[in-house]
Length: 361
Ligand SMILES: *[C@@H]1O[C@H](CO)[C@@H](O)[C@H](O)[C@H]1NC(C)=O
Ligand SMILES: *[C@@H]1O[C@H](CO)[C@@H](O)[C@H](O)[C@H]1NC(C)=O
Ligand SMILES: *[C@@H]1O[C@H](CO)[C@@H](O)[C@H](O)[C@H]1NC(C)=O
Image (cartoon, rainbow, N blue to C red; front, side):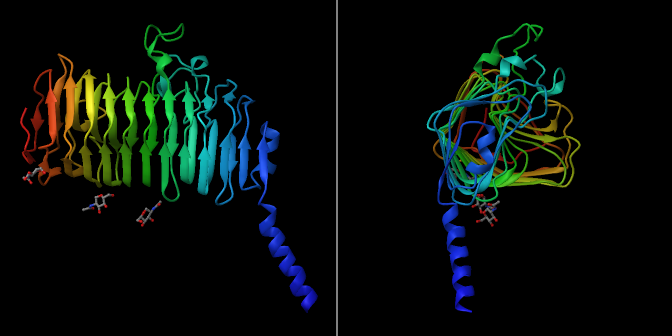
């Protein structure tokens, strides 16, 4: 009896103790053994073509990046990197995941041409993910679906090279559909990060309690809620303290013209600064995928507010300051925009809605 109890105890204790180790990854061959430890050191190496570096971690694991990871080129769906687990601390220490984008870029992104790994980085963990640089993602960069609260902090996405045409892009910017973050999730904060790309800096297709703060978005399509399709809910998005330079638009909500049964509410903007907007300052458009086309009314949109401190936007000449294109009856309530200031460009149209207070253009 006692012997059995003791051997069981030893088993349990050694079971706990066995993960209290440090695993080191120098190649794909090391991954399986390393993720059995709650400290994992990720050293520099090249991931072979067509493979995912997948870290399926024990609860409470700390990962330390000690060097740069590159991914060999192959035209496949990806992802290139995937991480899952609860209460994970991922320290990038400023190191880089290099997606080798220029080997894929053809100006078409996900709309044609060669198959590109997308997303490049699939984040399915809770905890903190910090100080990581992604260089040249083939197409979409981060897809985030955290199982519990997650803070992503101090990240860099540098796809700026994709602003230039290359020999495969017919004169178009070579990088395309290089979204920074696609976040259809809950309880996520993305902060203190720099995103240089050719598409949405952030796109939220559904979810709740998402904070995007003190980030710098450069060169892309701005900070987006949407696109929103049928049967989804968005509630509780805070966009604050961001700097948006040289984007098509600074702030956008886009809902599909054909969508039904969806609700988008409680979207709060504050303290954002934008310059060099090429098409719009703020655009709220229920006609997606058109731009200011015939709007649908199947997505109920309410409580879109600009609160203190003021959001200040400057648009280029030829760009519209604010355009709001609602379906009949689908934008509701009162939206307080007294803390929005937009200058430059021309006046945009406000269609099918008169609930905006504190703002005139
Ligand atoms: C998000 O937080 C809310 C409130 O604490 C909680 O009810 C919900 O389960 C959480 N969801 C996730 C995915 O973390
Ligand atoms: C608005 O969103 C915030 C942040 O997620 C949340 O705490 C609050 O309850 C939401 N308000 C409503 C009316 O749903
Ligand atoms: C809008 O917000 C401002 C600043 O918080 C406040 O002074 C004003 O009363 C609000 N307007 C409405 C109609 O709620």
